[in-house]
Image 1 (cartoon, rainbow, N blue to C red):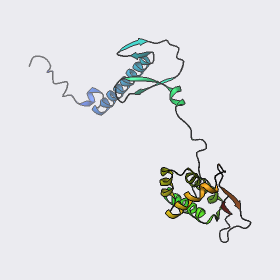
Image 2: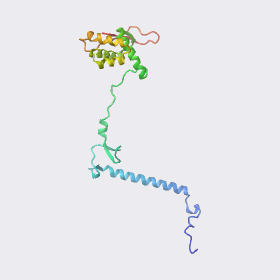
Image 3: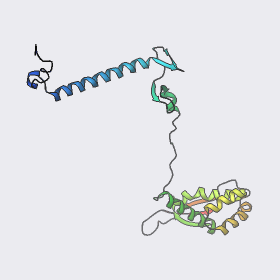
Image 4: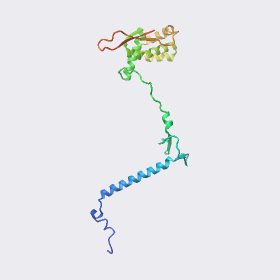
Length: 209
């Protein structure tokens, strides 16, 4: 009862304090964010001039030859500097890796190629579009190369690609005799004079040499 009560200032209306509690909370939040950002900047500037060796830290020269970036190691909780030049040199670019997709998804494209290769080996010559003829040419050459090799693994590879099993047996008998003196290039592709009726597609025939 002697002097002002210590709790009386807390019971005063907000108008006498000058700010509402929501404004105070926002101001405190902004100050906390600024303090956190300042600490992060100071820590980053301190770290750029240091490097870890084992468990200790040593001061590095202020002249940096290559730019570095810090990544978190999956097995350790220590930030390690990584050379960006070494990282960039390890990435290979996909130059000249394209191929003809023949307007089909992967499974349908593989089935189409296997069927066309089987018919070329069965009949010796077929007529199809120029794009398809050029696309299956290397597969026909590969099957003949497997037949010339003639071992068990080559035979199993041919069985897994060619649909007709009896055709594989005949291929492994005839191909080594027919192409004994030819190291490669077992097919030729020539364009037809007239396009296909209906869609005007360019036609070519592929045949065994």
